[in-house]
Length: 112
View (cartoon, rainbow, N blue to C red):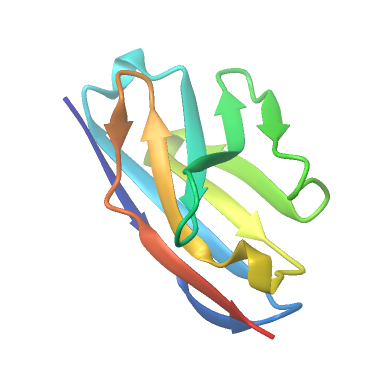
């Protein structure tokens, strides 16, 4: 079992920044990648960013150049630094990892 707890969401004006955190605990030795997904009202959940063991990262086209995913192995934590936020980034952001584990989600709201 793996537990994922997100934090860092909130309300921000367009152009602003937020940093999300996802702390992992439990049977984390099997974790070789971690993702951030998001789901806006009325839309499907979509992959935003992924970080793989070794530090390889992938991003959705819509966030490239604005979002950065990183990890602190000593803290078993993954971060999502979000800059130049747009109203269309408004969504619930979820942490996800191998085995189908999800966090509870954290709301990000970007006002215009």
